[in-house]
Length: 480
Image (cartoon, rainbow, N blue to C red):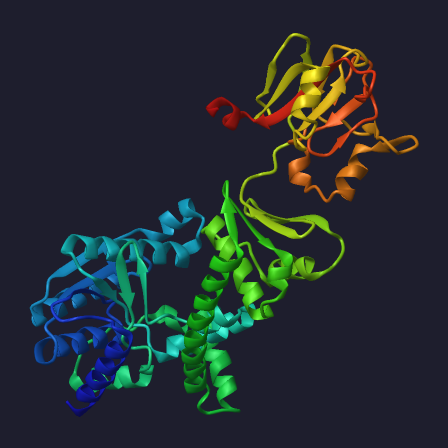
């Protein structure tokens, strides 16, 4: 009984520290029949009787892997009856389901197991599901993630608790090693089942437990405790860093139209550790599945942001995620890049406006007599341009840009490529397709709204009639 008291005391201490439960909680206890889960059920039952009022539900899953699975189910059923606890049971043909799911036997078993446990919790109104992961499991997990090349989040290992579908998954045994749990079962006479597949090194976790950790223990007899300690430290520091990254996100990142943007100078001012986390946090908001993301991709974004050149680039991060640099702005999107809409419209006098549905704009045209034009003044803003009506060749064409487009600009001897103007003005590539080109009846580009006006049909002393062109957002135009 002394060993039971020691384990109960340790679990109560961990539960209080990590807020694993509160009085009168209902907890579904996942019991496979192995020594770990059998110990968990008995320890929680002892706590519920003598320390904190808890309602326990014993739940067991038969994965259909081994012939003895049915015997194990009956073992757990008998245990629940002996303790006076409700028993919930599920049976799956995992080998068959694995062929359909594509997750493999282990992945499919885990998915169906958690699905059943969480469903059971919902039916009983339980706050949590208790799982029997212990300190040795934690050490194995840290090693596996270390070998995989994990960062601080991975090295924090198995979490004491996490929420899935409004149910908390709690692990009260994370500081207790396997030897102590086995000792409890043997000393107290708790019957448990042995899973022979735990000895098969074809499973990676088994190989870590049976080969890698014993090898490392030759150099450090306390390597398991050291790995558990590493997980504790990494977990606390990871939580702190996540909070800091969330604060950086609020201060630096702007969101709009399903895209996230930040200024590269502001990004460069924060520590590199936060830079990586900020990138991961943005991508996490864009997609729940970050399995395709690895360190090289995160680092490619970070380094590309910090380098002076090139000032424009685009990175396909996989999973439909894209990062683009547009001069001093870094933009993340989960939307596939759509090809530029191709359009061509004619604008005749006395037409007053033309809707450009492809880019969500509207082009307005007004004729002003000379005296009215000079009374009102010429400052109509960058999204307006005026021309000598009598010198402008009609009809006007409003179209999307084409490769090789050039424009003749006042004060410039010859023509300049539209593409070069966009680059000189640092107009982001994603915005260029939203700028229409206005051409006269001879095909000359006479105006690029918000960018340049050509030398054609300039207003001068001889002008008697002025044509005013204006470009506005279609939504704003319709509202007004």
